[in-house]
Image 1 (cartoon, rainbow, N blue to C red):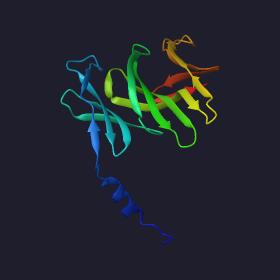
Image 2 (image 1 turned 120 degrees about the horizontal axis):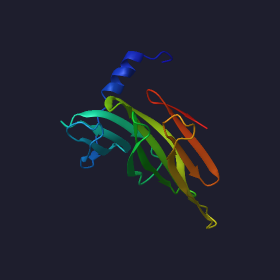
Image 3 (image 1 turned 180 degrees about the horizontal axis):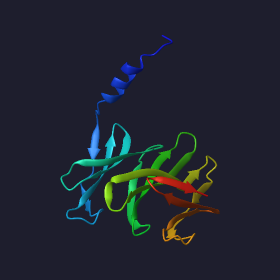
Length: 184
């Protein structure tokens, strides 16, 4: 009982069957500036939220799990931006859902999906900062913090950074090669 069979656990994880699945329609967009559009799809699988990218032949080439927090979670906006001539980013605006067990609380989070040199084999996902929070306490006090996102080249290296402001808090996200990020 104290020693676990790791091979058996790995096989069970690989064989995980999806019992309930819903997918959005294909949203076509040209990500790599080549002939044919790629497709963006939002999926719900057994209560988990996923964001997937399909190639022009409708084969899945990238998938990222979005971490929900409660009821009615959803991806509500996607923005395609150029950070430099060589790096592009899809910014996902994700509402993580809400809980209302004792107090109501809902929040949102950014996700950054990057690729380099129009090569979709370099797709990489990064969970960005929380950007929105709303809560209501039992005494009726309601609180909502807004956000602002912008891209600007802060260090003058020719590549834009992502500035996220929510309330009095500001964070700057610097993209480093191969899907790596730094933030301050």
